[in-house]
Length: 450
Image (tube, rainbow, N blue to C red):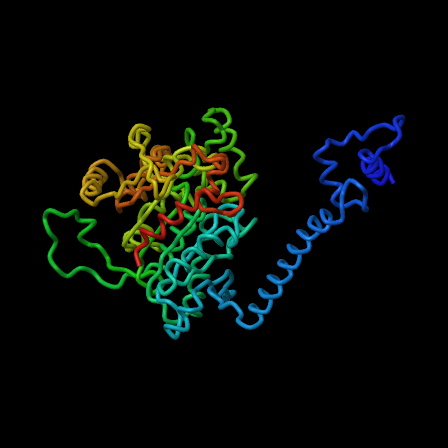
């Protein structure tokens, strides 16, 4: 009724109303707009009204025609399905190109395993998986792992690694014809993937030629291996705490304050279970070194280092800033003085958030190997209380992990509106919230070894 009264007063405002009546408070432009819908009056001849109403009529008719045409087209020629998605028997989802399956008469030969991080799920890698299939349709089949989701990520790196290894075996059994395998993991998933490949590693032979004097002994024995019977190609991690979360600014949201970092070390297991013990190196199974320390070398039952070496590429993507969950040093496997200086960071027009790329050439790695042999003890021999504190030093893990070469890709979302969620943006966990990380995903795919 109020609206009707207002419209009535507005309609009478220009039609010679009595002088004692209040004039409408609507602006003149609004009056003209509203008058287009009013009943006939002397201020608006029928011809003008017809032209005004005709505009809406024409638009409505055009929209109806377009809708009918689109519907008819959709019915006559249904859109071809581009991507096939199917649940795997062992859990998770497999994604591949439908056209490639028709063309090849089977699945692509390169299997990519994508692993989520803490409290994550297979959904976290949806965008990246679809980009893989769209950009490499005839080459890859992508499996988004689901065996370690939500609270299952509190069970510890070893238990999660065992589950992932079993899931990978199940996928390979189901997708006959795959010949190559790669791993792409985010955050905690990088540690889980390292454990799983160690469990899946299968040595198949040794080099028969005599050792070369200019090569290191550890490289000469170089076991040629397979991962679950497949040729290992790429091992890629995004913002993964390879050195754990213990130490100054390794868990950045604690702001580097010693008392907060000590408190986190003491209470992590209460929040994230055994995983907290592993990340903060407080586990000691049967008096052995912490799990993350053991994972930088070959153990009796699991060949962690040999498994990593068997991949043709190892790549660590790391957030240089604004990652509040994983520090730059631990995700890029570097010492503090090895981090690129700000003045050395560059900006690529094609990949605007990639600010530094280190290819990790093998020559520099050989120097590290020589230094490791000269200065470090055998890890299994450092189990007594006198030497145990040495195991908690990240230097031990850095030296162990760098016995194989790593490519390091540094990422910065400093100028992005999504910088405060950089930990998720680097993998585009949700396109609507983390779309600025698209160029990082494209960089990974463009440099992916097929």
